[in-house]
Structure formats: structure tokens, C-alpha cells
Length: 64
Figure 1 (cartoon, rainbow, N blue to C red):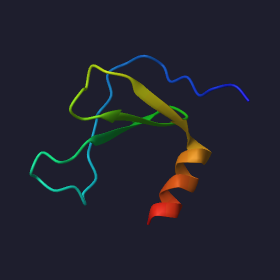
Figure 2: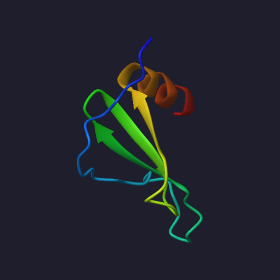
Figure 3: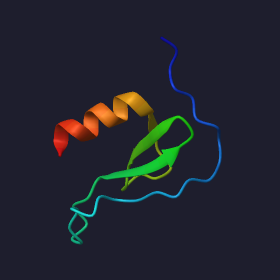
Figure 4: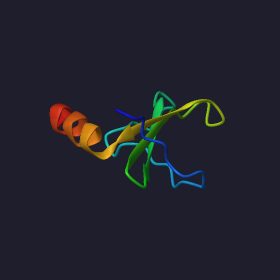
């Protein structure tokens, strides 16, 4: 199975509405064509994990 490769562009990153405001958040997400992107909010210039739409839906359903 080929890896999900989002187009390179500026993304609108967000944190979960369940995150607190005390700098303990460490994960941000962004919607991308074909799925979602995940990164460490403390290292926005660092690596980004691209997750395909189906895998993201399964993940979110499992944590809700």
C-alpha cells in the first residue's frame, strides 16, 4: 500500500478542543487532501505524520 503523500502547501493547524491552555498540548492536526496531518506543537518545523482518511476515521472512532 503506498503511503499517503499530501500536497505541499500551508495548512491550518489546530489542537483538540479538549486540550488545556497550560502548554501541555503536544499534538496539532491539520486537514489535508486525502487525510490528516499530525505534528508536535512544540516543534512545528519538525516532522509531520501524514495519515490517510480511512486510517484517521478509524483512529478518531477509537478515541471518542
